[in-house]
Length: 69
Image 1: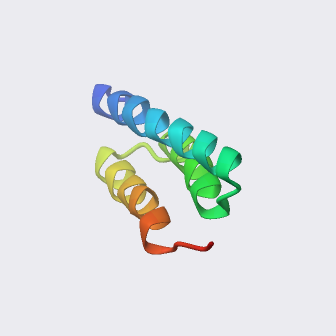
Image 2: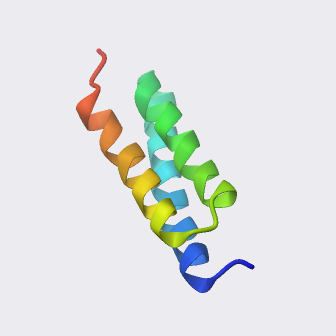
């Protein structure tokens, strides 16, 4: 069963993922593009709110850590 918390996390991280995807596509930044896709997909695959937050936090920080020019 999907909880309210997982729906809310999916909304928040999906919105961030959409922004990362659009930025990565426009700027040809592959790490941001893949992080955006992952942020949109992870909330659908994981049901635990804690795991959603942990996985998505990694994908939110990843483009800042791996800066490939």
